[in-house]
Image (cartoon, rainbow, N blue to C red):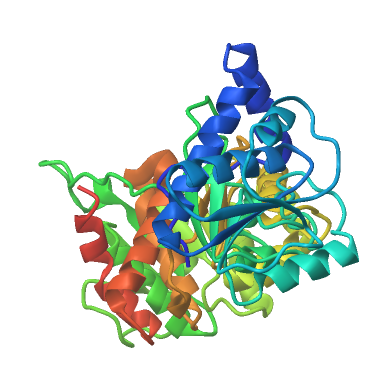
Length: 462
């Protein structure tokens, strides 16, 4: 799994092209930008190639222009480089870089495989699959080779909206300027190999970006349990899940956590307060957050408890069964609340509430957040945090060992705890702490073990 740079922008193809056009309007030449891109990729290729022969595949467009720049730099540095180019008419800077190449030049059909392949056939913005004959040729040349892709492997939809047959694969992908959605989300993310980001020194929007390590201050000198946050966790038919969430809230910085339900005295630390009656607690004006969903169940009592939670004036975190109970009616009911709401669905729960949204995971989550007027933490190996203001944060730093029962309950409890001190960054804090705690927990852990490492993760955020 690639750990992407902190706070790196993620741009769709149209957004990346608009940023490049803005750079050209500001005085940056297309030739200069192509030189920057080509040199950045060439340095990555040289780092892994050593003295092995290199074959650079060049397409007819700007990606092919980058490919010729890469080949020229590598040849200047003493590498054994040949170019295999597709037929076609290049324009502008791409045409000039092609004309400047004086080394070995073959057609794609005549090229012989080499140990290092640089895939510069097609880059971002493709809307259809590679021609079958080209896809077959790319597969033959790539077999057994170390493949470096320019921006994305050829044939991959960089916006991660579609998955085309016959797309290439890479061992190393050099993202130019910004990450693209397909680097981190969707089935083609598996084709990228290791992804590195090449800075092209142009201005880029950060409406969508990668997660950052948060800064978390120690409680103020005069802090007390209520100023740090009174959290209500509403238990249901599976009390273990609610206990996990409540324990996580305690360990993630909450000052006072109350777990409601009928299993009083069962497990959990002594600092965890138990109450049988949740309804009286929901009227407490000191509440920093209410968490409903972990282990809630889907019976009539669960529905009544969910209705009461939605009616509170406290910030509300909705997880698990509560998301499934709300279903397609959820967005309208949540949008009608006067207090802030956070949702923490996995893919199945998300689809039950937002079945009609299209596009990649980032786009779908942003659309859903706008619809529900809520912050959505769409969980998975590519967790997306989308805010109702339209911004989004993507995290891939959680290890795959998180794919075990109960870890989502821990995340929900962590998020509830961070709402009071974390403010607008609470969801980002919770996701980062959750992933970092998982790395401290090591391999094949149970969800309970995450809780014991939340303090260590917080200590790294000073």
